[in-house]
Image (cartoon, rainbow, N blue to C red; front, side):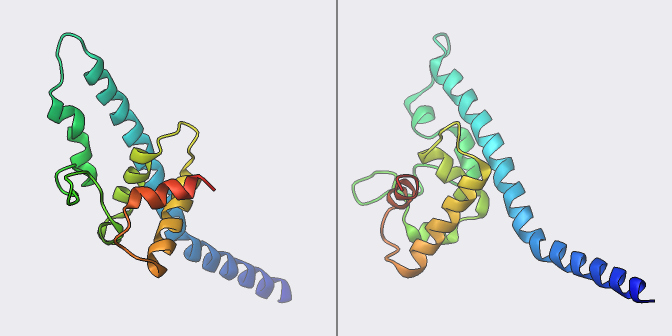
Length: 147
């Protein structure tokens, strides 16, 4: 009887642990999927830009079509000088996928792991929780990787 209770308690504890970690694991999976797809689409974009026969237009180079999927088109986040410069306010409204794509856009090191991307997202979130949201996201992202 005691072993049965102990077994039920262990199974119940494992179920609670799994349920508690599911959102975290789901977020890691989503970041992983975005990283894989973003890197592939970036490689395709570099091939398009390097094609000597079919020259890409300046607009296609400055604002690749695949970036619209991540809601990171250059025309949407222009600052007063006309530069692409999303801020902490924009960051707060982005989905996890857009945040991961933004980090990859600014720091696309081949060795950048899913875990490191996820940690950078959390670090930027934490920064903007207690600091000025008018600071450009690229500055905060670069600071995450310069530590």
